[in-house]
Length: 206
Image (cartoon, rainbow, N blue to C red; front, side):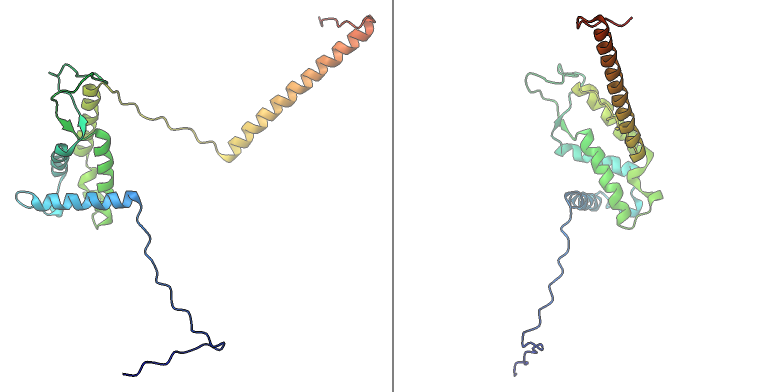
């Protein structure tokens, strides 16, 4: 088979080849979300009996979170442990490792988003039901007591609007101008008083 002739341009150059379009690299969050979703689907497949996603409820989600405790790395002391409520125990104990509340909360957030991205409806999302929220709250409180680490909500900083920021700057500028004017007035009064005495000493204002 004869090779096809190369088509040249007017200047005699070979036309440039089209550059293949590369798909964007997924972010760390998107990659983690995909792994979490695949893990949950695998859990449903291995469920006894196998559980279709359409029949998954909040109770199954809580069951999944409890299943993940066996892979946890956070020491949670029991009430019988002498280190219960101790934030920095001097040595290790036999208490089991669990999934930290923060990890479970972030996991549910990713799975809730993945469920809707894969065709699920918001009103039937098992990851957003009240039972799951209550379970996470109980985990947060129990782990805080067991580990002696109180949970505190982060306070959100109040964001100033551009007009508010300009007003704040203007107020600061006005205060600075007033202070400068007052200083100048005091200096002028002191100088005048000094001239009146004739000896160069300043008289304290009344």
